[in-house]
Image (cartoon, rainbow, N blue to C red; front, top):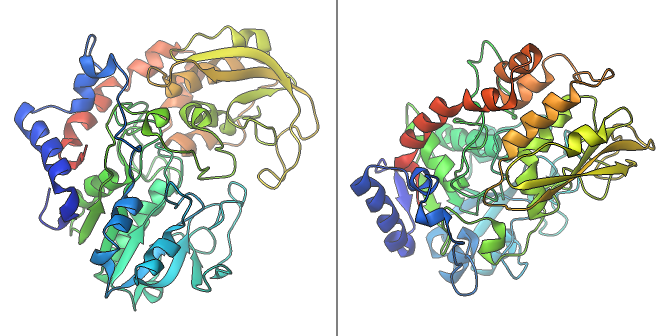
Amino acid sequence: MSGLVRLWPFAAVLVTAACGDNALTGSDPASQAQRPGAAASARPPAAAAGGVRVGLEVLDAEKGVALKGKKVGLIAHAASVTSEGHQAVDVLKRHGVEVVRIFSPEHGLQGRAAAGEKVQGGKDPRSGLPLVSLYGEKTKPSAEDLKDLDVLVYDLQDGGVRFYTYVSTLLHCLDAAGDAGIEFVVLDRPNPLGGERVEGPVSDPRDAVPASLLNLAPGPLVHGLTTGEMARYANAHREKEVRLTIVPMKGWKRNMVWADTGRTWVAPSPNLRTPEAAIAYPGIALVEATNASEGRGTEAPFLLLGAPWADSAALAALMVPGFALEAAKFTPHAAEAAPDPKYKDQECSGVRVKVTDARAAKPYTLGVALLASLRKGKEFAWRSEGALDRLVGTRKLREALEKGETVDAIVDTDAPAIEAFRKERREALLY
């Protein structure tokens, strides 16, 4: 990577070893692990004693020394906490770091706003600091927001899939820091889908599908990168690189799923409530583009799906690695996290999705299989014209479904681009 990308000194041994292996073997460790018989995928990884330590905790252990004397803008949300529940802003302030203002993504600083709901800025009542919303009138910090800052610090728990908007917020903030000529620091956190799982299509050119927060991230739909790695990858592809610093995790390995990290799940958004839902999310969220329910307004969003007209038996018969589908009935109700869910107060037929093997699960394949099955219903419809295209960043999936192509054929189409991305991402990997 470029010399403009700096790694925290106390994590250098961990990172150098990982990057050195990539350079020596000339291969992506994730690609190696997914080959038949590969030892890395044959046994669960072991977390370090006390579990994985995220970037915020590594910074905390060093008493925030690298940020002292700098004026800081902090991008944070409800999951920006240590394993003991201490919020990022409190950790920084405890060590005398001058936090000038806070920036919040979709769902707001407290993580309570519904999907797509505009979030207002103003003042954070807890810290008393100015609060800038990046999911309201703007999605990128302005020059005015950054003019008195030395560094912009990113500490969001991402979902590991392109349409989970925090990765787009990462890229916008990286660009904004570059435009302002200030440093951009990422406090790294686990990808809840792991670092080996890479699935789905890459985005079409922007003249085919307009850019939005749903489809900005490069690479396949499920990219297998941590936020720090995504920042490194994106920065290396900029015309002018940003002064980028990553505070890596300690103890995280690419083949870890959430249960391997030893960490308690803190919901990064109001409907992504469990690690199990996070595994299923890249697939079940595709149902959002249809007139079927993805489970919002129930006790298990992204683990329940269906509609009053859905064929629960046909859905339950689907066979996808890592998942079991059981026929179920459910009734969505309005709630703070889903003020107006599909089929509000109407009983729906569908399935409950259970993750039987988080490491072997193929969520994108699940999503394609669900769409192919739901489309057979006479009352099926896309939620709006181009809804699926905007969600996945390409028209190819919808066109293939409408042509009646098989699930296997649709998924296999993405294989060459996935392999190319695995090779291209090598230099960005930290673990």
